Length: 158
Figure 1 (cartoon, helix red, strand yellow):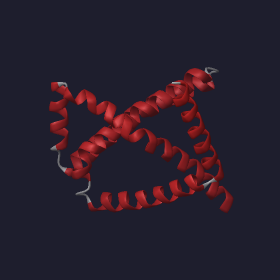
Figure 2 (cartoon, one colour; figure 1 turned 180 degrees about the vertical axis):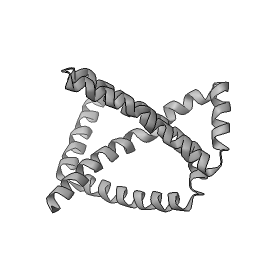
Figure 3 (cartoon, helix red, strand yellow; figure 1 turned 60 degrees about the horizontal axis):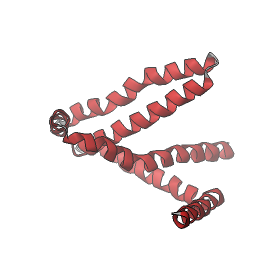
Figure 4 (cartoon, helix red, strand yellow; figure 1 turned 45 degrees about the vertical axis):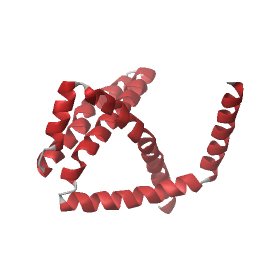
């Protein structure tokens, strides 16, 4: 049972690592369109929401993308694996971008909910622990060395 928990934790950490890697850049990309007046107006309205309304809005992207992900699974089961995987990846990227931007806007209101703030603190502690384990792993260290060599090669080539 312990190895299963470790394996699950490692896979979860990799998913979290993707979220961490994509969170800021994707949020920034969505934030760039916030200069458009209708989006700026919407963001101001969202940032002013009370805590439970903010929580409801924060849940929308996950619920909205669920049918898309189920459709992707249906494509995979019908023999369209590449299309289904592409749809899942696209949904993950779009969902992460939207959730990251919403969290940036709604965080002050969400943190007013005591249970949410406590859960977020526990989540952050758990996530940081797993990320530290992944980053300390031999596989991660090897990937970092390869990345550095590739960046050096690209910079030399330029």
